[in-house]
Amino acid sequence: MAQTIRPRARSVAELKNNILNTALTTHYECGFNPPPAVSNLIPNYETSQDAYILSCAEASLPGTSLATAELTNDYSGITERHVHRRQYDTTASFTFLVDRHYRQIQLFETWIGYIVNEQNSEDPNYFYRVNFPNSYKRNIWITKFERDLNNNNPVPNLKYTFINAYPVSIDQMSVTYEGAQVLRCTVNFNFSRYITNITNSPQVAYPITGATDSSQWIAGQGFNETGVIGKTNEHASETLWALNKRKETGIVLENQYNADEL
Image (cartoon, rainbow, N blue to C red; front, side):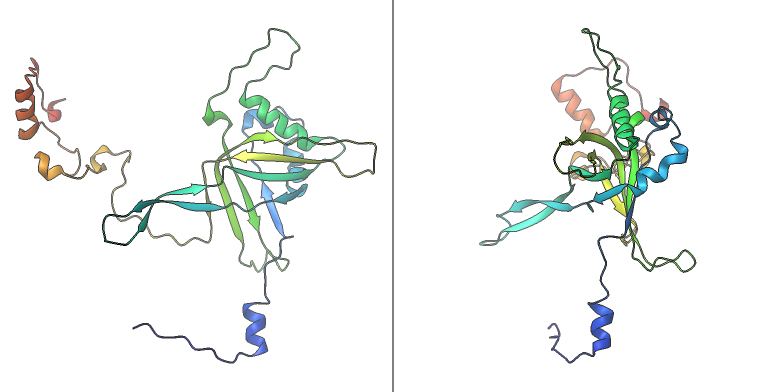
């Protein structure tokens, strides 16, 4: 039987150490890594990278959820839900303070223009051809830290790395004659998934389906029923079950080879 945790008195020092030492939303840094083909189109990109990092006025740490399948027939009166997929937010949004050189807008307009291989032309016969995904997808990141960050004595930080990210949209930016405000540019990134530096995940202890080494591929369930005696395709050959099935269906192969001979 599980032990019941009873309430107990705690000192002020314990409260300060556990619940008052909170993380603040105002200390973070975002990193963007456009493809070389994009950065080469932007004048003085290498010397102005801090302008993009420090001008990110707002960002959102990503959300995630687990997709489940509902099972109702395993146990009478019991409904179970088992996980079959981890899902990630569709986009990650970043808002930038635009400087007088419009560098923030230029970076992401150039990146999106490169994705669709855009031609800066007013030709009525305008067309575009989208580049291959590997050429425009890059990793970007958000690092969350606290105000007591010290390079000589590093404190824990939280880093989210977005895998295969690219800008998918730029929100509209309003300009008006009314009260002057700082122009802000919000860019939405699509990404495949993210990883963090604080997740302690166990190492996978079994071969992964789709590994480069085909001898490590895992066979499906029921291999004993079909006569296949190996769980991988290493030293594969036609099984007796497959041979009988081929004869039953009348399939005749003039040239038959063992996989080891190929």
